[in-house]
Length: 215
Image (cartoon, rainbow, N blue to C red):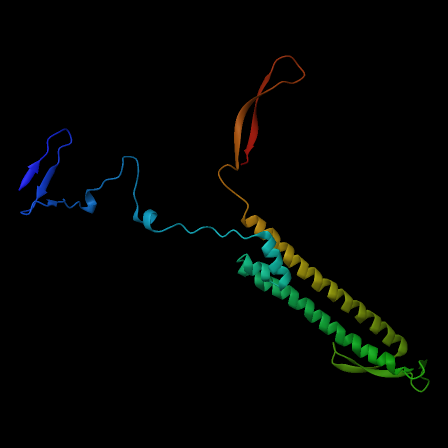
């Protein structure tokens, strides 16, 4: 059985043998978008992935916690070889200069009687292993003093450099986090506009001006 309802927007209603209304089947391809719009399955079903926006304070904390921590948090993995290379070189310099300093310090102590603190008169030179050349030389007390002072200074410089590298990595992580959250959009643009300039003479002068748009 079929009933028809009249009117400006008449629709055909179909019923079965028991009098129940049978709803029509609407195919998916019969739905057309509104003029001027475009429907896409990707835009409806797949959400857009939000851009990672690091927190500068958190990046700094991670950088201070351990070397390279800030770079890992910022996902700047390509910077890790630079950070670890610089920090590893500084640590190696500390160890190397400390070993050389201890070699000369041992020789310096050999020239003195440790029980009395007075210089020994039975020796004039002492064998010192030179790690740079791999040989042992007989050095005088004056030469030992100069070597001890030099490598103690180099060791202290190495400590300063290692602290500087550690601090520089933390500063870089903080700055990189700030740059990742810096907004670069179409509002940051340069426009050339006409302009009228009023000099200290009668009558305006036509010209141009550069306008930076910043949101």
